[in-house]
Image (cartoon, rainbow over all chains, first blue to last red; front, side):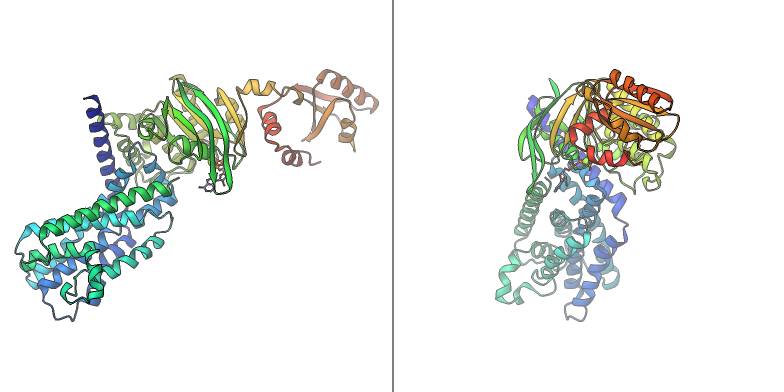
Length: 253
Length: 318
Ligand SMILES: Nc1ncnc2c1ncn2[C@@H]1O[C@H](COP(=O)(O)OP(=O)(O)OP(=O)(O)O)[C@@H](O)[C@H]1O
Ligand SMILES: [Mg+2]
């Protein structure tokens, strides 16, 4: 019983600290210009560059835009905040607190998640106002946005484990992954029309499942079973979390 | 139970040995100083004792708990003030304090009460709602200390708490350390300021190149090197070659010119004083003042760390 109480107490401490870390990020980083550029404007440019002029209608384009907005915004807080905190030595404060690295990773990801969930409203509202897009079902939309945002936020925290004091280093590594993801995840090019060599890669992209769920809200049908989409996103979140925890441990000696 | 117990601790960074098989223990309630020159391994030791860095070999326990196996439990009892004031420039002093309290799960009422007390203690109350960005270096340092105390730790780590600060900040910090000591809090501090170690520490470890050269109370350390008692003498007139003459006096191991005075190091002050008087007489000059000094902690430090040559070079400029 004592042991149960102790574990319960520690779990509370970890979640409490993770939330404190997220609040700190919100207060400090959300309005930093480079975060606004990479998190909010960049996905819009990507959209304009690749989507405009394609024959697909708004009910394909809007979910795609939501998906890539989440991809970029969720993974753009920690790759900026963590290197800055390494330079300012405030990161040591986090890793020397009486909490696990998992709680630090979770707290950092939480701030990216909240940021991204907020930004995702922009294309969603724009779709309704400008194109009059209809939502057929809210459940896959909400689930899709939450899981995708959390997944890419954790991915951002994972990349930020690389022990550098310069956000640019992490951003360029991250973009080597983020840009190809757009093309292999069925966002603008339907999965069916991706050539067979690329087809394998489709299954290894979390964006595939996130986009599939969000599309379901607009099109009413999914490429995979929605439960598969949810399960795969959860698996990616878990894997990213575990790898991130390991990497922070490894680089922190 | 010891507050800190370190046994055969080593740390390698690639081929560099930052800590070479060090062992020591700190009693509960003690103020313990780690005194050493740049690169001695002071910060490395603190980083290992706070579980940020892992040792290459050896063990460390905090209040009987292993720092590697029970990192979280041990950290709950400590406050950490690192070498660089690690605070958030974009947050206010108050927000910085509250954030740290939340990392340590200090309850809301408790943290607000302690926060107000600490800001008062460190003379920061008026600036509590200003962003830290505008704080002076000393204010940042004091805030970092306040943050290190927000969880009411049993053991406080201070990595060079007063280095580079003005007298006022220095005094506040020194007072706080004395206060903590009186309340039974164990303090582990590093410094390269010998006077600070002398004034604040119950015991001092002298560390150099990753090895501990000596551990004892400042007074006892001074006693270990009686050979560096010294005599300070001022003559009424300057004379060329005086330093060379003084060096000829038997049992004088070294002579330094310090301003308008000379300092002679010896094991036998009384015979040297007699010889100085004799010398003054034969050279027709008068001794204006003469006094004897026991060894200072600085002398111990110089002797044990082998930094003598550099110091000599500085102080014998004629
Ligand atoms: N992360 C690291 N990687 C490589 N070498 C390191 C690292 N940290 C410390 N060192 C080396 O270990 C040695 C001890 O460093 P440490 O910072 O512990 O010294 P210190 O006694 O705190 O010095 P100072 O008074 O300058 O703060 C130095 O030679 C330093 O260069
Ligand atoms: Mg140091």
